[in-house]
Image 1 (cartoon, rainbow over the protein chains, first blue to last red):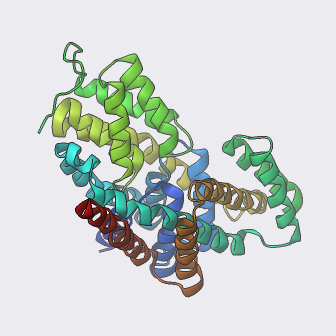
Image 2: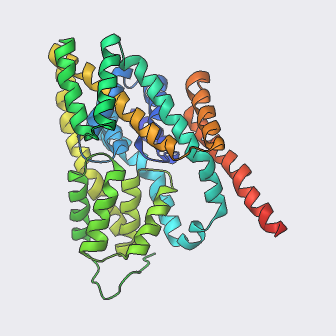
Length: 173
Length: 194
């Protein structure tokens, strides 16, 4: 019943995915890497990189990648449908009552709590991924260099990923 | 179910047109859901005029307040507006299909070559860039929440998820509930007094 397990796991992730792909990485990591052991932590990080250099939403790319790794094309389909399942119906409901939803103080209040939480989630993901990615002193220098490319030179993320691959080849091969 | 809004003189797109437009956006937009928003706007507001500018802003605000994949939520919303349930299926499948196919192709090769020393070395570098990219996204979002409460809640979330190891699922539910109790009920009380 691996397909149902994939569907259900990704449905849970989809239900509480607020604020885009990055904020949900701790949830992915906890459920996919730690609870189910479907992916090693380093493969998990590789998957994030692959999601970045291919088109499309990160959550869809991740669901497809993990589902495919576990149970081929059927697995990819169950995981991907799972992640969008609950939101699909919620959008349907909200689109009917859009005016009331828009002015809802309840929604506004919930988001005042959620938005900072997402920041905390992203940094917790950084801390966790860093323990597997920043493996030696060279890695910390490379990390600093890549931040300069991103912040000072406003370089495109895909280009930064490509450059990091080249540096990785030179330093670690 | 179909809510017809916008300029009624504009002819509604066919299901095939919806499917193909969303598939094109899914195939050529890199960088996740947020990168797709300006493309949606260009196609649906400016190019074809299916949706008006204000309505687009409303839809954007709403899909961001719902859980899920932003690009998919957007696709479902636009599909429903223009062509009902069939429209929503056409747009959401359309936008997800390119990712689905591309990732399957890449994953097939990836698992064959990941043990190759050259590929392993390249990915040792690539993993560092993943940390840099996520860190950058975190800093950007942090700057938008630079008030005392925001910083406290962010630090609390970090401590609970990373240091204590509470399941992120529960932390999200907790923070949402917390926001509701503190902020939403405060608003109501103020309103009552006034």
